[in-house]
Image (cartoon, rainbow, N blue to C red; front, side):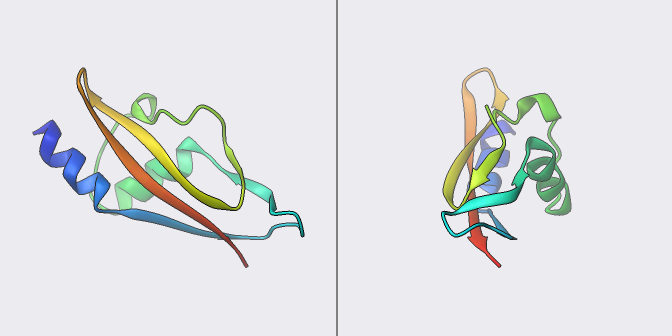
Length: 84
């Protein structure tokens, strides 16, 4: 079950378009809550504590956010942040 969920998560990409400064810093941020809401919209239900985002994402770029599903099963969700 956890491996099937991991495969579903790894097939997804959270694309965020946000306002950013000239040097690529976001005026807001992408948080674990944003990741959780994205997963829920895609029918993947996980607990917030499973989203292993150390700090909110505050700059443009591509990120891999680990989602710990089970003791030895961790999926990586791709998060792409681009400027508006």
